[in-house]
Length: 236
Image (tube, rainbow, N blue to C red; front, side, top):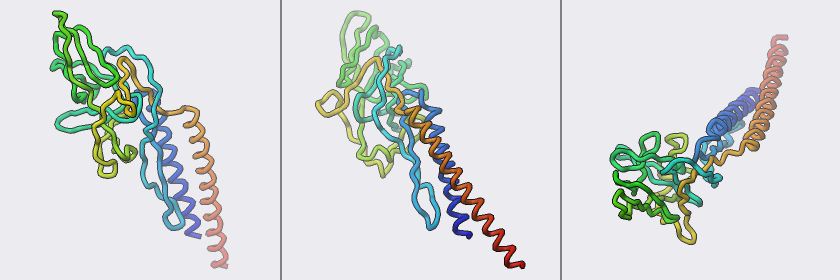
C-alpha cells in the first residue's frame, strides 16, 4: 500500500514540476531569443523523479526590430557575451551602444568582438558578422566581427538568465563559428529572433499534465482508502 501511495505522490510532484516548467515557458514567450525548457524525469523504484530540465535550441522566427544595433542568428550557434571577466552565450541580440563603444544588452553583457567608435554615424553588419561603420568625416572602417560559438550538446548549457547560458562540462567546449559560410549560421542585422515557445503546444502540455496530475491524485486517494480499510480490519 505504501509503495502505491509513494508512486502516486511522486507522479503528482513530477506533473507539478512539469506544469511549472511550461508556465515559465509561457511567461517568457515574448522574450527575444528565449528557448523553451523541457523537464525530464526518470523512474526511481516504484515512483518518478525529476532528472532535470534543458533548453530546446530550435530556431525561432526572425522579426524586424527598431533597434539600431539589433542582430539575430539564422542557424545554429550563440552570440558570445562578456561581463566582469565571465563569458556567457545567448540567442538574444538586442544591444545598445555604451560610452566605451561596446554593444551591451540590458543586463550589461558586452557583445564580444565589436567596438563602435564614438564618431560613427552609420553601422552595417553583413551575414558573416563583419561590422563596418561610417564616421563623421565620411571614412569607412571596420569595427570588429561578431563572435559566435557552438556546442556539441547545447541542451546541457546552464541557464543563468531568461535567455543567457553558461558552458558546462556536459555541454562541451565552445567552438568558434564563422557565420556566413555554406554550413554555418548567418547574421541578420536589424532583426531579432523570437522565442521558440509555441503557445498552442504549451497549452496542450498543460492540459496533459493536469490530467496526469488528477490521475495520480486519484491514485493517492485510492491508496489512502485501502490503507484505511486495512487498518480497520486489523482493529476488528
